[in-house]
Structure formats: structure tokens, C-alpha cells
Image 1 (cartoon, one colour):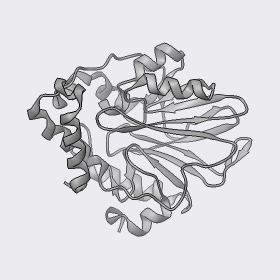
Image 2 (image 1 turned 180 degrees about the horizontal axis):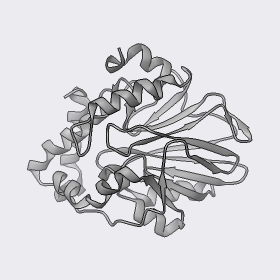
Image 3 (image 1 turned 60 degrees about the horizontal axis):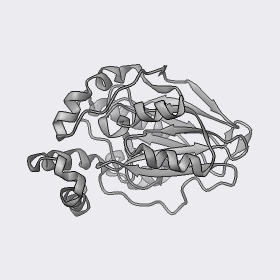
Image 4 (image 1 turned 180 degrees about the vertical axis):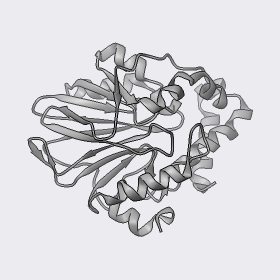
Length: 269
């Protein structure tokens, strides 16, 4: 397991938490398998999207600690929410703290730890749910994913908009480009915000990479629909072509930069 003791400790904690009574002991090994997608995370020597013209909130949610991410415009108070995997009450609390109105709910891919809260967040906000069409079969097969780790299948919701490569998502004074990055799943996507991002100029470009790229590792490819060939093509031909100072926000763990991953990531040598 690439993540070593840290992930082992995470599984141990999961076993000890009160809610883990719902997780059979024999499924903890499977949780450990899924957690290995998180690898060994290094924090890049930079802050998370620190910019006076952007609200950025990262909330690790659920037993697999998916990074749910909120990106808001402090002037218009419009926001998008990426990967509300669980603990929707916490997400709503942060939205309320900043008085944000959700304009879109985006899934970078349809693994259970990233989509478990879609239906509930949509119910409370009314915001459209978006994902790539190639992950719809994975989303509609949620019972199989839930059975794999021994938890109840989350409620599903209608997907209102199918993302495709090259789409532009506007909200507030921002816009993000959709990059189709298959490999971890067939419909995995990343969102890219350049420095000149609508009416706002960011200090660094921002990439919300889902489970395609991590700090020091890449997404696993041995789950449903995964492909090592595709993920390496997505990384080398798409993500590694972005500016080196691009701040990368993965679906699990800490942030990094494209330049640091070119230099340090063993999968990209």
C-alpha cells in the first residue's frame, strides 16, 4: 500500500469511530484498498487558493475523507461546490457562514465517496448537478460500490447537465474550464481556473483535479472502468501541460503544484 502507516491509521480510526459499527470488520480491508488512492500526500510550500477576491473552503468529508471544495465570489456571493461526498450539513454550514448561493454542484467522478451527498445538497440548494456522461453508469451502479465497502447506498438524484471537455462553467466573476481526464474513471474531469479568470485575476492558476492527480501520486486505476493507459495520457498530455505554478487541489489530501509534481511525482518521471 503506497500510503503506508498514515492510511493504516485512518482505517484504524474508522474502526474505532461510533459510526463504524455500521461497517463490518471484514470490510475494513476494502476501505484500506480504497484509501490507497490517497497515497502519501506532501503539502506544497504554498497556501490553498489564498486570494482576497476568492472564497475557498476545503472540507474533507466521509469515512474516506473526500475533499469537498467550495469556490465562491465574495462580491456576488455565487459559488460552486465540487464533490459533496458526504456530511452535507457541514457543507451547508460553510455555505451559510459565507452567505453563498450555489450555482452548480460538480462531480469530478462518480465514485461513492465523491457523490454520496449530491442528492441532499441538490435538495437543499436547488443547484444543478453536473458530471461527465461517461460516469453515469458508475453513478447509477451505486449499490455495487456501496456493497464493496459495506455501507448503505446513498440516495441518487437526477444529473442535470452532462459535462464535456472544453466546457466553460461561469459563476460570479469567475469561470472554469472542464478538462476530461479519464483513467481513474471513464468520466473523470478536472476544473481549471487560469490566472485571468473572468473579471478576477488570480495569484496562481487553480486546478481541481479530483482523483486524477495527488501530491506525490496519481489516482488508482483498478476500480470500475479504470485505465492506467488513459490516466497517464490525461496526466502527460493535459495536466502536465498546464503552467508550473498551477495550484492543484486533489480529491484527497493536501495541495501541490504542477511544477512540484513534474519534479517529484514518481509516476511522472
